[in-house]
Length: 405
Ligand SMILES: [Zn+2]
Image (cartoon, rainbow, N blue to C red; front, side):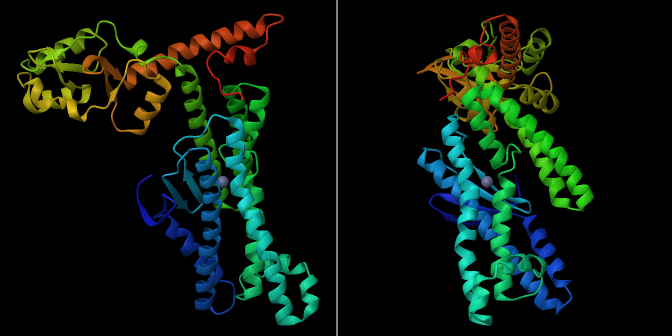
């Protein structure tokens, strides 16, 4: 996500603000400024309320990040967006208990804030309008209705209500929101991790559809944005979980092409074009005359070389040099390598057994593998599920995922 400004860094976590965050500040200024009182004071008060609300959102995200840290998962950054915050965890632990605790930590922070601010609100009210106010719970509902009227009691009461609502809203089972993650971790007690994710994503997409209806009829634009985020975020995570389940425990060397062709530094682009026409290989390792691996001519580099230098351009001038190619080992787990590759810009990795070059691993090869092996696994599920007395999907998934705890 581009266009973010770093605000500060605490405990190794960078807090960033996306540029679109300015829109919510303007929105706050506009809504509160139009509240009927003094426009300037109203607008400034609105900005203050929005900023304090996002302090609470940031604390919510820190709740996730600090619990994740206890399980050895770092959070490089937290990004503040108009629809809320996003804690970008390095990875989501596939241990359901850990996911449960990480997910519930966020809403818990909001409930704790509400619990701390509620007595403070009542105490301030009592100081201002006598001891009877200390028992008057209507202060909180009034704070919601009179949110646009600047006063300390209103501000505190409004923050109490906002934190309660934030906590409750995030607990809705709309994967990948917190409640959806909690749902998945609970489902994973009874079914495989992949199956639990499928159910949670399905429930989340139903919730997203409800948010769309709610957003349209309630005139709430943010709910539409949130529905969009849930719909695509959930689908993306499901794809990730499914491919991870397929690739787990498969060593890298199994994805190597058995008869991959290499190029030599002295060769010209036209030879690569010739090879590309007659094979499905799209990346070519480049070797020097001594047989050492020196670079990769990817499909895009080939096209670029052909356009710029023509068929007689030298391979060596257009290849990606070896020092820019990420490396993995033949017995590395494909699931981990795929995760690294997805997070980086490089679409190809060199498989090295110490100094010996074994071949290239490309993103296309892995995607192909996910499709083929995924189809095979789904087929065996259907067969087992249909067989009387078989344990159904839960028992067969254990072959590919060891996520159940
Ligand atoms: Zn959260």
